[in-house]
Image 1: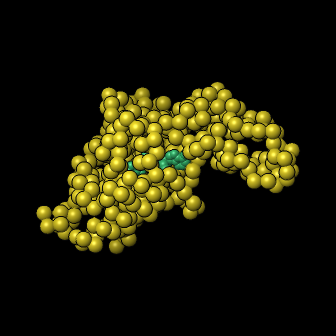
Image 2 (image 1 turned 60 degrees about the vertical axis):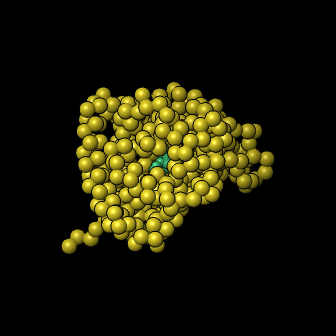
Image 3 (image 1 turned 60 degrees about the horizontal axis):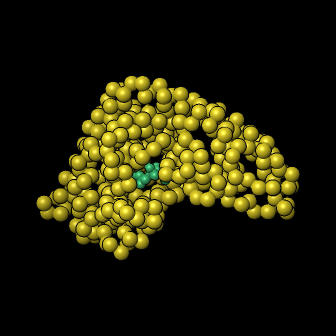
Length: 331
Ligand code: TYM
């Protein structure tokens, strides 16, 4: 009998265009994992309500995101792609897990504290229990590996805690999932002024989106923060310079990276040249992804079909888990 493949799950909120952080932190791993694991990837549309209550554009944004995910390497034949809101089983599991999650730990979550700072006028209960819904997303398929960027690590740790509590109280249903990235280390792509992670809500000039055209990519990179150059040999790079080197490493040839590393270490680096090279390589990297995503968007019915086929498969797996959950809980 063929050995069952490990289950992988990850998701993304439909709150804006896909950016380099999403691509390198998550999607690149997803595209590789789909051929090695049993993979579920989904659009976290319920999660987006915690910050974006307006649902008017949700469908359009979801379709666009799915097009971008496929352009970035997801193959609907090789993995299951669906919308969270098509799987009501997740909401039921969320309810049970909410009884096992404590106010203190939810209030201490880093992403919750960030959001309280960013939107003090809308600290809703969904925001507080965001990690519980995320745990339900993962546990509903009894996933083992969760490919995400560094910013999601704490949520995966909380998922393990909720799963352990459930298993201890009611019976062993859930394996304990771990955050995953090829190479071992979870990535954190910085924004272009080095002040924090690249994110959808950031100043758009500090974020490179897979939808940016060639001229805009070049403009953003040429405007990225630099300084007069290192003052002493082999010094540690400031964050904003390190961020540019990280991008260079991701899209440029290794001899190019080595040249600029060595120029930096010898204090002869010319940031203008480095940014020009980075812009050129970034444009070549993004252009085919952008064009493919745009092509896919011209056929929304096809995207809807992918999502409804995905929903059927995801619901099957979710229902099997929920049956076990209800059984051990005595419902
Ligand atoms: P979201 O939509 O913010 O981001 C999607 C994925 O992109 C990664 N990412 C980054 N990685 C590196 N550097 C960055 N600057 C960067 N910005 C974003 C994120 O780590 C993530 O992997 N809560 C999740 C969505 C979610 C989910 C889940 C993920 C809901 N349920 C279950 C995994 C499992 C989120 O808001 O991701």
